[in-house]
Length: 268
Image (tube, rainbow, N blue to C red):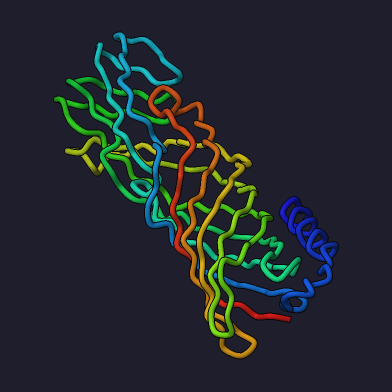
């Protein structure tokens, strides 16, 4: 129900945006556009999991995690694209404002396909206990392997596009928008690198409403009433909320993602 309400708000906003008269110097398009698209996040900056050295005293509990002997666990710098392959499916609606400016609003669904990586390293033998979840026993120093489960997000945003160049066949534009993403649980399966058959399922991040801002450069190629578009965006996303079960090990920050977008444009 919450998703339906939020999507409804965006559609109402779109309906309230009416085209203003075009400049007398240059005739602009009439109405607006519908633009379904696919996206793939190809690169990211900032650490989804930040590098940190965490010291544990013997038999002490630290944020629901304990070690039976004194030891040090080091977390490795892990970017968003180290942890996930993100693909997206969305649709944007634009409304004409002037010959070079369009307002836009849209909705998006994103699929996070989990990857495996060496997320942590322990400096010696110890049993790592996760309260209520299980334990792992390292017989020597080594890596702790992390396998992320698949997850999903959905959201919406609004912004504008400014055309740098327009012709009968193609256009080049810049764009910017602000919006939100509703995240789901993000679960990891943790194992010792040399004992991959024994895994513990730990929630790394809680569901949270994240805010984002993005800018990008795009181009459109016209063919009748339809157009093909391609964009490269730089997207800042607010940092996620670390779950209690992983808060002794996982430290996070906001990230910058670089999605590539391909779509079609239908004018009306």
